[in-house]
Each structure stands twice: as C-alpha cells, then as structure tokens.
Amino acid sequence: MIQMYNVSKCYPNGVNALVDVSVTIEKGNFVFLVGPSGAGKSTFTKLIFREELPTSGQILFDGKSVTRMKDSEVPYLRRQIGVVFQDFRLLPHKTVFDNVAFAMEIVEAPRRKIRARVPQVLDMVGLAEKAKLHPHQLSGGEQQRVSIARAIVNDPLVIIADEPTGNLDPETAQEIMNLLLSINGRGTTIIMATHARDIVDNLRRRVIALDGGQIVRDEARGGYEAGD
Ligand code: ADP
Ligand code: ADP
Image 1 (cartoon, rainbow, N blue to C red):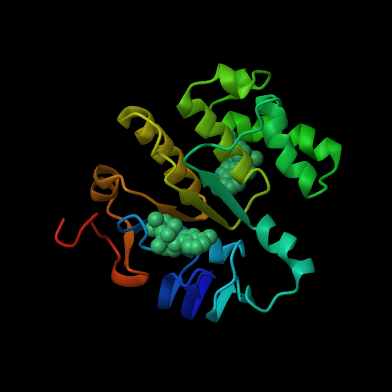
Image 2 (cartoon, rainbow, N blue to C red):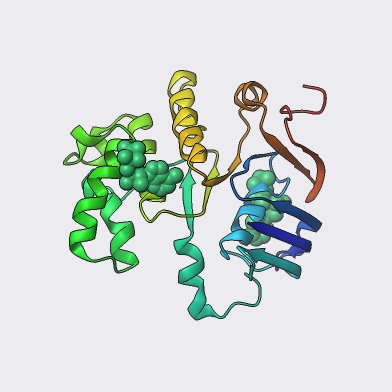
C-alpha cells in the first residue's frame, strides 16, 4: 500500500526530520508510529498525503509515485487517505451531518449520494442521533467520532491518525481505539502516531519506532518501547 525508499526530509531551516527511511506498509496493516517528540512521526505521515515533499527518496502509494505525481493528481491521492487529528479539527459552525457531508462535497459527490452515505457512516460511529448538533454540543469522544466519520466517508484505502486519543480520557480513548480497530477489520490500512503506551502495549500491533528521524525498531507485534 505504502512504500518508502531511502526517504529523507530536511526542512528549510536545516532540521533533518527524516533520514534515509525505507519501509513498506501493506494493505490492511494497523501500524503504531511511536517515538519521542521531534522524532519525525508527523513528518512521516505528512509525506504520505503529500502535505510535505521529501528532500530525497521515493514514496509509492498504491503503486503510484507520490513524489512524482503532478499537482493536479494530488486531490485523487488525498481522496484515498482519511486523516484524523488530536484536536478533531471540525468546522464549528456546521452540524455533525454537515461536517461529514463537507468531505464528500469537496470531492464533488452527488447530493443524493451524500444524503444516503452520511447517515450510514454516522450510524457506524454511533452518532446517528446527533446529526443535527454542532461540535460544541458534543463530548471530546463524540467529536473524535465525527472526525473519524469524516475520514471514512469517502471510503479511503488508508486512515492516518495523529495522536487521535491525545485529548481523551482512558475510557473514551479505548472506545475510539475500538472504532479504529473495527474500521481496520474491514480492510482499511491504519497508521496511528501515538504516545499512548498502554494502548500500544495492549493491542500488540505493528510498531514502527522513530528516533532522530530514523526507524530504530519495526516489530510485527510490538510494545511501546523495546522490551515492553
Ligand atoms: P514528531 O511528530 O515525532 O514530534 P515532527 O515530524 O513533527 O516529529 O518533527 C521532526 C523534526 O522536524 C522536529 O525537530 C521538528 O521541530 C522539525 N519540524 C517539523 N515540522 C517542521 C517545519 N514545518 N519546519 C521546520 N522544522 C520542522
Ligand atoms: P453495512 O456493512 O451493512 O453496509 P455498517 O453499519 O456495518 O453497514 O456500516 C455502515 C457504513 O459504514 C457502510 O456504508 C459502510 O460501507 C461504512 N464503512 C464501514 N467500514 C468502513 C471503512 N473501513 N471505511 C469506509 N467506510 C466504512
């Protein structure tokens, strides 16, 4: 699904955020990206949806070069990738329904398709009853469910989640993890950057550990730290 070959990223200020990273993430993988602040986790994810370009190296997404693709092809790449953030990033003046619908409007889905699809996805994340509310009327966990609904509404191949449980209490975090696991169970590849040691240690999924911009560990059923 995603292949990186000798990928390095040096920001204009001279920071080497990633150094010679080579890795393959297969379709259906659930991957935890771990490592201290500044290790390069966010940069790693941004390179996948072409928020940033690498300084050198090659990245393939579903067999297609992310680095060589034309600007006009970037929207097609992004349609295949749902992104979830720690701070939800919902539109405050839109309802739950409209926040999710907006992701379909951006890709110019027909209105009848939007009207049919949004309730399905809200149902899946357990928010069917809250479609008409605004984000400020929801708990943090519910807001994160809206952002997950928005991420999956266009049926992406990959979900990238950057600290999706970072603002949630442990119980709510576990509910969000269950939702991500059920999405993964349907074949969607998930890449999740996290500092949540207990979640990583309990789930025993693939762990890619970054430090100083390099992959220092890659285990099929890893813990948060080597030896965990
Ligand atoms: P992490 O997500 O693991 O905290 P990041 O990928 O955000 O790591 O950052 C890796 C390094 O790159 C850090 O030293 C950070 O300060 C630097 N960095 C990140 N984004 C930028 C940017 N846009 N411009 C300059 N330096 C950046
Ligand atoms: P069903 O599977 O019967 O269509 P569900 O309640 O299980 O209904 O799912 C509700 C909606 O969520 C469906 O339209 C389904 O396609 C969508 N959905 C479920 N999992 C994913 C996923 N991983 N990515 C995108 N959409 C999904």
